[in-house]
Length: 411
Image (cartoon, rainbow, N blue to C red; front, side, top):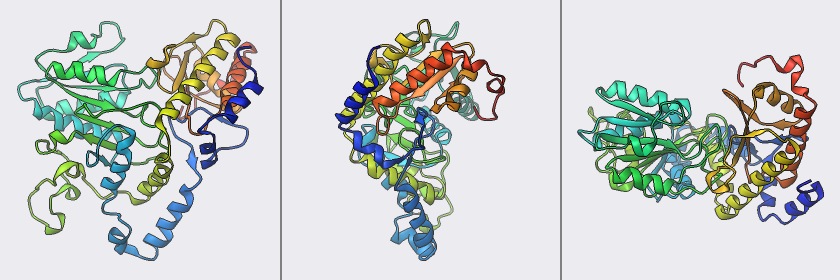
């Protein structure tokens, strides 16, 4: 055996992040490896949301837009997210969904490169990114989408770049395999070609080092590794050098320069605030800010070190216990996010069998079994237990049980 469970317990005792596990509610008997889809619940969240409901809303009513800071939540929350992605104050606005923010970023970026009519999109990206690019290109008209990726016939980025490219949209970490781009190198490559760089950080922020300070735009969600809760506000980063030149095409009242003057025509607010549109969902912001209280105390270097340790340990154990299984994630930790994926032709029933045995991962078409490692609340013993359970399900072919063949509505 690569390592014993007792040795994993010793590593957990030495873990500088070990106390953060107590900040989260985790069901007994469960190894939760789905933080890359929905992060665990911080213990403090329920009380914070209850206070917002019972006191801020229940007692103070509309006065809380001022007294509780509701009006400024998009900016104040964005400023708390900014250090987690390498952005500066006033460069991040929290709000809306990832899809809406992709649309805002794409439609703001394209006019900054007049005469260039090509958008580079990654066929390996999460589908919503490609779908929104298609919608934005159709809405603005006369734009070509040039695809890159691993599909047959797809171009490589260096082949796709040219003096006709306006912008490039990529994810830092691939949602299926966990493969990670070098943000600084790719950003420099794109900008050297005269195009704008837009990053999707949904599978990286809160799990791997992120520095978008050289990029032009970025978007991300907060319900995965950042533990903001289901439906938590997403966010958009806009480099300060673009603030005076960009336009938010969803030009709502909250992004107006003087909303309470009730002017009949739109006049954008200064800075990133112009990317606000509608009323902030206060209770969702409250839950997210409860989690950000935790994140403000996290050493991000220690977080990455633990992520590498957990994922590497899991890979080593599965290599030994499940010979012949195909690893879909990069073995090189520098090229891997906080996720380990395997290929298996019957991946779906395998995941169902694992869930019934307390190991919560998930499945992505066509053949990917995913395990997300959230370093704040996962332990080395969790990686050990998950690997040994995985080996049992495969070696005994427990996944062949008929009950695991039936597809659930949400998988």
